[in-house]
Image (cartoon, rainbow over all chains, first blue to last red; front, side, top):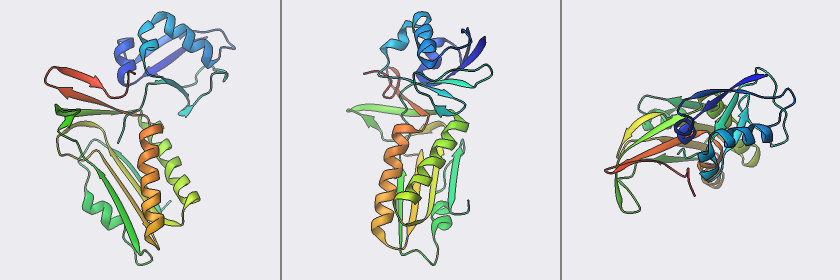
Length: 80
Length: 140
């Protein structure tokens, strides 16, 4: 399945875009997504940490991704 | 909910209008936290800050924090306003206001809200220095 990934903050600079498209297997997890992204964008691994959000909620590594989910890369937050 | 006001805005925040909204005859204590743009980080002059938000999730995370404050303390109203966009030194990126019958709950809830916001709400700031720009907290 094809998914779109939103990027914010430093992740947007690492991707060179605020949105990237990826091809994932149908039962892919957050863990699989992070692995694939880190292969394509090794600078992700230099971040202090980063989370993935699915449909506006923080996701866990084992969560499954579905087609049409809204996926976002959340680098370390620094609001306030 | 009329006891909660969450705002994410690209316009200037107004401290007085936050105080006006949070005041009520039932309250005996109002706690207001105002975050401001500091002119230096570790001794290095800061020129400006740029704030970016994942807006729908930022609003939903701020709503969760407000809800947690109501669950943890006997507070009456909670207000969280946060800026996006470019802010100059001295401008206000965040205002938290909490009202309660007694001051302890207001102080503790206000502290909890700003501390949790800084940990969980998807908002990012980039500091601009004379020699370049840095996303805060991005790298170890």
